[in-house]
Length: 147
Image (tube, rainbow, N blue to C red; front, side):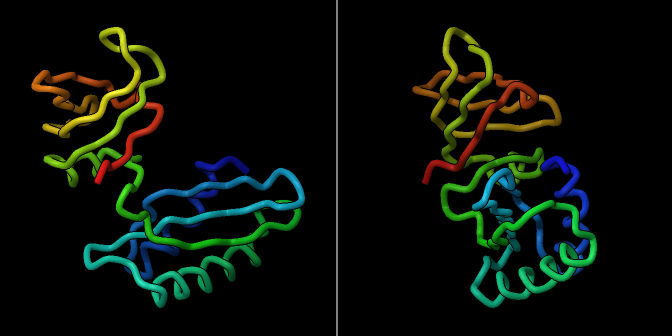
């Protein structure tokens, strides 16, 4: 099962509990597999939130059995240097400092660190040293908040 298929399976359960599935990492090839969920809500995430989601998701994974072999399930908050993986994340964190790494060079560079000025469905605008750079979301390799 791909990462996206797994996220599609787990997202309704996470949302039904009142959380956003902010990100998902799955490394299940080998003896030390791990499925790591990052959950979020406006008030922040505590240990009780992680436990609640872990129990529900664990039960779902036991029933559906989408992943062969053994793995550990981890549920966590995204943290202060959270990944920005969805259009809604870019909109929510407009005005914040970000680090962006592109798949391919834009304006002769792949890394941008600066203030996130704007976001729409296709692009984000990051100001670096007083210069605005328009970056296509589809070409972003990784974006994080830079607290």
